[in-house]
Length: 569
Image (tube, rainbow, N blue to C red; front, side, top):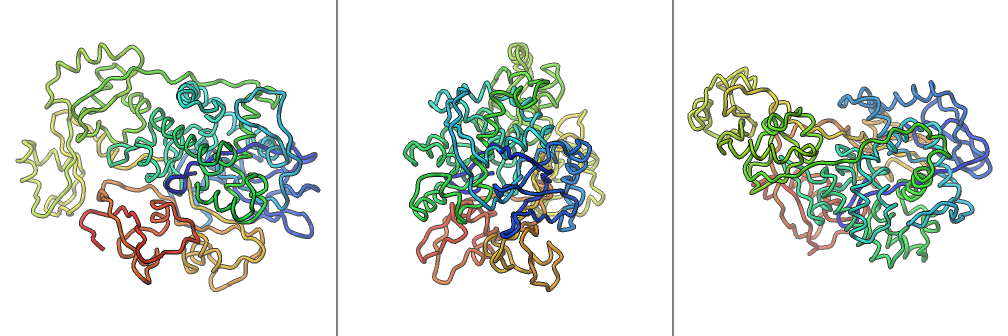
């Protein structure tokens, strides 16, 4: 999942086929210890071993019933490792997230790498132990989840291939979206990356993807695909035509990969991934993509013989020049509200953005002409049935009602206000401008992102709480609380630690919009100090400015910050 400005987005990899395999728990990372070539897990119920290659092994004969029960453990929505509750999600979504975030730790290198020449690819595909590992994972214990990804690909790949062809990119690269999101447009990562191509906001802005309270164009499958194509093309050109380095930079960032090249004096992805500088997620990124491509090109060979591919995404497009409720759009098209929302995943609320001069709206195929015929007969003032109002000092329900020509009782009823005399400044009210209103806008005040959960890290030899806290920009106290460590400093290789805060749903209705400012670093400044001053996170500052964990601030440096209006530090 994307991490940093100018170089984000992740790719994924293939698999590995080792002679004999045992079950690998998708929800946990594995670590091969020095000495015994065994795998240590935080979980006591994962049956794991390794062979002479030093790779974690997957048992292909492990019963599906056990796989299902293990997969259900990923419902961290119900109870995560840190003991804090997060939002509930479906089993299918939990399994998607578990497979997307699978990150085993390999003790040894990738083994012998050979080119795949029996299948036609337009992207350089090779096979080695790491690629085979993910091939076996995707076609083995994670088979059900990967099957869903393959079937979902039918909806998006035709459009994505058409767009990639416009940029003269390998069409096989479109499978990057599979590894990024499992072709889920509402995917949202712990790093705040969103959409099928998993852009973070800062990188999205670079590639013309707009995000505000009303919409998130990172979720627009067509616009996001254009952005991903441009981003990959830029990385390919920067790395002088090396697709493997370009793909790795999509995950880790251009600067990170460039520093790895300089550190190891090599432009070979496999060589620079043997060292400790790159994170495991980046090392797996390319192998996952290669594995997915290998299976997708010949699914029958890997046992996927009953695929039911989704129908390609098709739609009409119309432009609306005024704020228009999607309930009205659905009525005029004769379809459900949910179908309109599904065709327009970038729209986060119940309406097209009120401040936009125009908005391109997707409609079911063949419905544009009858829609426009009816739509143009509706007065502009009647196209929006609701208005969002942010409470300011001096507001009362009576004043608000008079200003908009509506009834106080309707405001109270729709917003479920228990004490009409106590309005909280900064809170959001939905004003029903027409009779026959529903609670739909109130339901959609909250974002509908499908969030991944708390980031985890597998302890390695030589790690300490101090080192881990520095690496993930958190405090030792937070690590102790999240992982219930008390005052103990004892860590064991293979132990899994939670290294980020809980990923709960955010209620955006009470959040203020942000503005951009440029901060000049002063002597003695740290990212933590600056974050505290402007009420933003250090990781956000790093993402906005494409900074690595080891970046050193220097007086006079300029940092871009996204802060609440009126917050001058």
